[in-house]
Image (cartoon, rainbow, N blue to C red; front, top):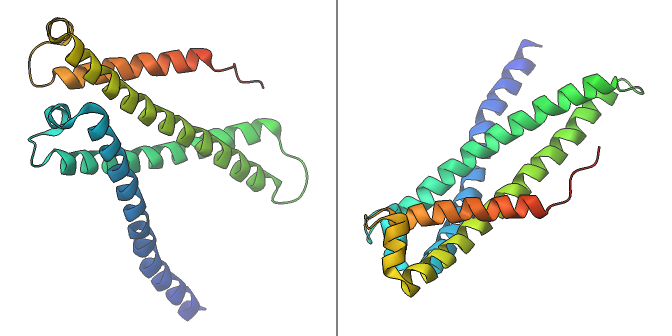
Length: 179
């Protein structure tokens, strides 16, 4: 029995890091695609002003985006499970021995999927905001400078503000969830 437990512990220790590293390339690939879209939407100089010098802006964008996505995903999964546990406890799930576990699993997956959908929408909002800000800066540079300043971070301020406005509009247009 002790040998079996030791073997299980060792295999878990070997598999867990491999599984964690298997997730990194997918996150990095998604971050890379997102940064490419953001760079093309906002223009090279504007993109560089948001993330650093022209030479390293893309790398910084990918790194920041991948780290943020990984942290956010972990937090969302944890929150989804906690909320699912509370909902299933409140329902007092009847049925088989594992009804509670099935309930939690099902609800947690649904909540995580909804959070992932919102993340995608927020990324799209940010890319659309970059396009909008690029056009605004090109059309009327003086008004752009008045609204967002003339410092290096002006384009980033514009993208942030515009993305928040787009998200608020999108959420206002969505139908209210039914219980």
